Length: 173
Image 1: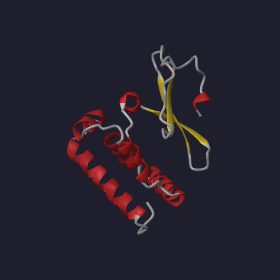
Image 2: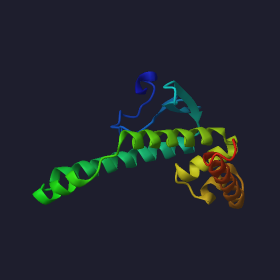
Image 3: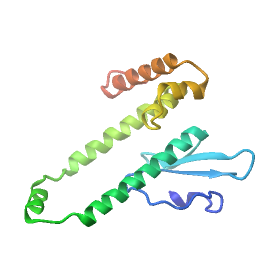
C-alpha cells in the first residue's frame, strides 16, 4: 500500500507506522502552485483506494501520525526501562487473551462503521471526520467551511443519529 505512489514526489521522510494504521497519506506537486493531497487505504475487499483530500484534513492526518509515532516511542522506552519482576510477569500471564472470535467481531464492527460513515452525505461525513478523527472543534470546522458553529453541531449530531440507526440495524443510510 505504501509503495503505490512515486517516492520522489512526496518530500516527507518515511515514517514508522503502527501495524493497525489503515491508511497512508502523500502529496504530489508540493513545489508547485497547486499541490494535491491524498489519502490511500485498503477497503474491506483489500482493494487499494486513493482519495484526494484538502489541506486541513491532510494536516490533521499528518499530525495524528506524528502523535502516534511519539506514543510508540514512549511505549518503547517504557518497555526498555521496565524492570521485570516475578509478580509483574505473573500478572501479565493471568491476563486473558482475546479470542479469535472477539478479534473478528471487532474487525467486522469497525468495517460496518467505516461503511456507514462512507454512506453519509458528503458534508456530514467531512464534518464528522474532522471533528472525531481530525480533533477539530466546531468553531474551527465552521471557520474552515465559512459557516456558523451551530450548523456544524447540527450536521454532526444528525450524522451520529444516522450512524446509530444504521449500526443498530434499524435503517440503511
